[in-house]
Image 1: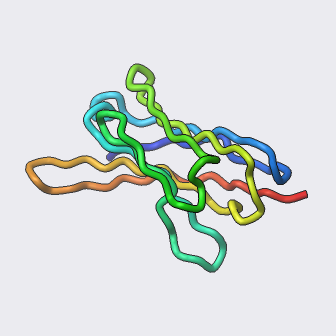
Image 2: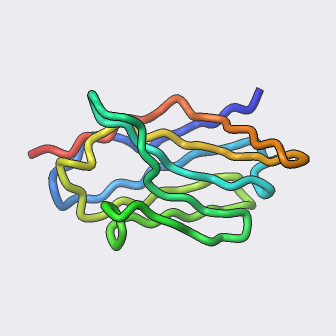
Length: 119
């Protein structure tokens, strides 16, 4: 079983910043793509940002220019730096690890961390 451990959520005022972290097993981290998703109350889970094994990144339009995903293969950890936070960013944020073995994709999820943006 692959366990992803998230941390860094909390309550922040609009315009503030938070950094989320997600630690993954070292044996598979460097060979896996990592992503952050979020799910607001009553809404579907949506992709926020992804980073490939080689470090290429993609972002949802709603967070471009404000969020930054990065990875540290030595620490087997992926980060999501969130700046200029808005109330609309309020959601549970989930870390995702995608591992491909012989053309079959396996997805693993963290437990989720709550981010609340409110004054």
